[in-house]
Image 1 (cartoon, rainbow over the protein chains, first blue to last red):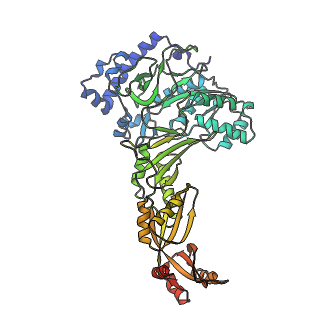
Image 2 (cartoon, chains in turn green, blue):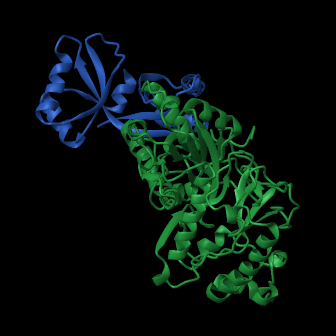
Image 3 (cartoon, each protein chain N blue to C red):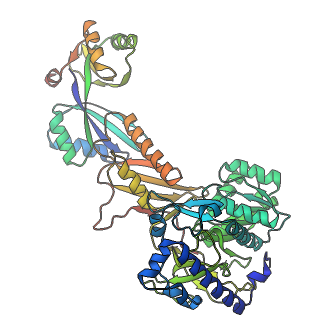
Length: 438
Length: 143
């Protein structure tokens, strides 16, 4: 078994409990004193920071949601002045505004530590060559994995996503031993290598850390066989810190949550009630040490359960099962979070389009996800020339691309062909089978 | 000066063209000419019919999206070089043709070609000056 930080990851449960109690009290005070949003939530129900004396008091605290980020866009959730913020990242919001997160210098150091644990759990050491094919930029994946690998002392190849043939070339030439990317991209790399006549199983590549989107055990088998590696699941979300929230060890039996820095709860998404270990529900996180963006009971909308039994690896951190679904309609396409409401608000802005649309997500075998948006034509769009229809298609596609950050294929369809249903319309068809067989 | 053309948006799926022709038949509309411009996902069916307004109403009722545009119906001598003369005139004036398609004529001496061109207002007097006959809607109906 591999460990980056044995003392932390295998901390005695009693010691962990005491540490978490103390850190929670501090975080609650920090959040209450410095973030008006938290102060308001506490004051509304007459809750005082001193009422929270440890993890047992956690259920008294109101939940935080993505809406809080939207209402306090861009920096209103930050608990430190901007002169202490050394980095910002952003992810998709439910509408036009993205979810913005910030880091102090200590937060960045913490993040690197957590990603070092993640990569270390798969045996990454300073002798490794880490090919980091997560996207660099506002997305947390690229820089998150980068800092973790650098902290370990590995040689990082910051290749970012895309340009798949070049990825294979570099993997061969540089002798990459560790790969970081989304699971669907790992599948594509395998297919592309095969097309190029490269047998990745004969290359030095040994392990991959795959996350940012849901995947299944059957995908794991496929990736492990085609690349000749161990494929480990990693989990994170930018609101909590980014990748590094939880990670698999070589047992591949669920993801260890970094419990010395985060508290995980599973709640009933309808009632908000905390569910006992082993019961499936919505995952909720509270941060314990973050400075710029302390989070209290943040609802991830991810469905999973916590595995109470200790892991064979020796880590005392609780494990979460791989994500089993969502409580909202968020889609993850090529590692990018997409809300149908974002697509709708773009279409509403374009005057030629009707508000009737259908989102079709698919994944061809060995290829990346495709996102199609079907839009019903309106009399304003149709003319006698194909060119004007194509212009409208391109206009919608480019607006969607800039709003979502990923390319979208727009397909014009005849009016009334998208089913109208009583009440809530069915807006999404997801043909990928992401949450089954896991 | 032009004649009215219907453009119908059709998804590329079987039976859609039949739905159009059936709707027109039920409304007792006669199709005089048609052409289809297509892409991978959809096509535009362009139609010249004996009663464009009634045809549009019938197709809209049947759930189709229809646009009405004016196009030119030009009489072309049914002999070698007949079409070339007309296109030469447009080319010399630098007027682009967006699309064109032929019409089923009855006389045998002339064919009728539907033109959609740029800068119609400039083109029509020039064509007339060169002796080209441009049919009106009424003339077309009476053929």
